[in-house]
Length: 579
Image (cartoon, rainbow, N blue to C red; front, side):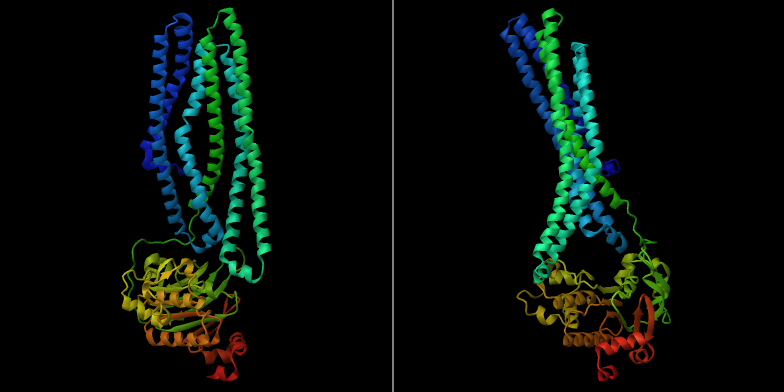
């Protein structure tokens, strides 16, 4: 929690004034037993004066009213600080997550990140509010009650000290054992989030294979694990209230017992016993608050640790400059070049080994190979989603590490393997690359991507609603919309990462023909497993087990590259191969 204090920098006033208001309320609360003792000893036993009793009663009402007002002010400041800090933490988390490379995002996991932004931040937010309200008040009540008890009767105050020590030891015992359990609970919650996300996203697949029962068992297993660990920590937490009550009530019995002896001996007044019992009750209530605060702080500590883990994760891919660099027009420099590039994810052998090739401006390049051979990894190095382990990736003759992210990626239109659309309208989705794109530019891109045919038939055209993830469109329609989105703004480099997989052969052919006709000045990179898609490309790169098995034209590779020949013959007839 201490590491997150920086998020309270804008709420220093609230953090200071809030506890002071609560402290003032605690002082007034400590005065009430003394007033009560005076009512009994002076107003009733000595003076038998109803006016004095009423006057002291009015004073108690005044103390209560002022204390309530002070508590309300504290509540306001605590809410303002905690809500503001929670908002700042969520913003910082979201901002930092967007600086992480794909490697860190893969390691942390989407479900875990969602849990940290929502559940963990809520725990910390609640923790801040309770700390402002109770962290100073509860200890002050305990210490103040002990001091006031000492001023009334020093010997009987020893009972207070004994009770406070026993309760404190109980709190320490529970807290030291609860913190690791709460951390484990959050991990179990991550697992439930992961399974829930998988089941909701893959609902159709689950039904298609009639796996509802087995998936229910997986969810039940995860929730049972969470229940088991939650019961463990609940049993520990359940010790707090009964132990606190037991110790306090035993202490009250001892005070009444020994106090009665002193009253009979004439060394104490009846009002003093009432005051001592009141102070013991205040200690009890304060300790219960402390017990609940300990539970809350334990949860908050586990959540804060998880939040700090994200914030302290250093991005593996960082900008080396915050300014755009100047690029000299060099006709001889290739648009994209890989110079002896190797790459691994840091968990074993290289995914790419000694990759070397150059792509000239305006070329259409096909990248083909078997599943898992490194095709997507290769193209992900161009926009710096990952950094090469060794070697150099160049764009316009400049190392991609020298570019600012925005300057590098603005030159590119990227269509990833998974077609991702965002909730909103088609027009809003089309303007991701160029925010001020005109309808004419959008329609042109849609026509090239073979998407305008179905978009114009929609009742609202470009204003038609896109549901979350684009689920109101078919797989092929989503792919075509994603291709159109990448084409808006006419990027210098177009990267299509297996973006034709959901298209029928007629649409595939029409799309390739439209790309060839309308992107003469654009460098197009097509990652695919279909030979027919890239057969007419200017350059074909053949990948095999992370290595470049061959590069050249279709005819050259068919004669010289065994890997490419096997792929072609597995998909095309002899006549189609030679066309």
